[in-house]
Length: 304
Ligand SMILES: Nc1nc2c(ncn2[C@@H]2O[C@H](COP(=O)(O)OP(=O)(O)O)[C@@H](O)[C@H]2O)c(=O)[nH]1
Ligand SMILES: [Mg+2]
Image 1 (tube, rainbow, N blue to C red):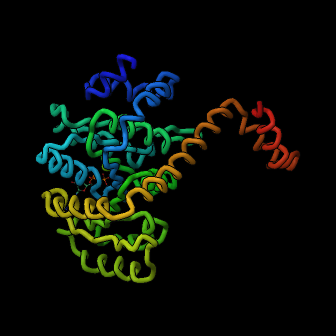
Image 2 (image 1 turned 90 degrees about the horizontal axis):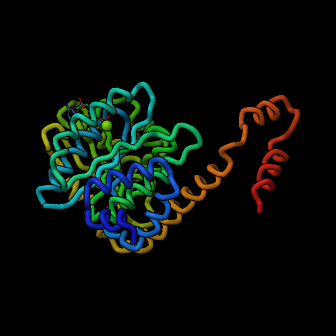
């Protein structure tokens, strides 16, 4: 076993930070490290927290961390922040708010940079969660902005997904319809100190009554005021009820089926990183070539 792997398994925060950087850079060393670490994973609960910008995900995550630390649980936090100018400020805000945990060696916090080009964020997030799992974190919280497809994909990689909604936003139900309904294992109605939580609750219940999940789970609704810490313990309890559901093994297989797909997708795209997509796109758009012929040529090039 390499020195770095040994120190990660010991939970050494500096080794963890180094390994996280290696994973972020997608270095070859990171892959061999992850191979070494993988047999030591599978113990952490991976919790996805998703919702629109400003819904209170960071505030809630912060409160959950406090609650878990009170139970003496070791915690990892991964903040997935898109580089969009809308959330550029929130990125800093998240960091500052999270600073309150920085002196605590039981908490490890990492902001995941969006990968800009060919995706791969889902795979990188999986790797990072595995790293924290191997390092002995018992709970890994992943905060994602549930607006892009990429972020919804990441949420699906979690063992339990919490969707944070807020009352009084007319587009709530739209967001739910746009696919968040299927990924929510727990609904949090945050900012319940603001007008309208009853109405939002009725809307969610109405949508829930239209469909049943194949696992029979009816995602509970929890009202929170994250800024006050209200409902945080209840949120944790709701997540734990879901995690304790029978069929955890089947869920693990289903999750790995998704994760492997994401990892393969990324691996393939990485191999094609040098391809001039722009030039090919121009050819296709001008009808000088067709996408099928071009993709055929690309895949042949890489079949060795
Ligand atoms: N009134 C009220 N404000 C909240 C609540 N939770 C979060 N906020 C505020 O909403 C804003 C956005 O919160 P943040 O956690 O950064 O949202 P995120 O973008 O989803 O991570 C901040 O100003 C918070 O202080 C709540 O329960 N009630
Ligand atoms: Mg945030």
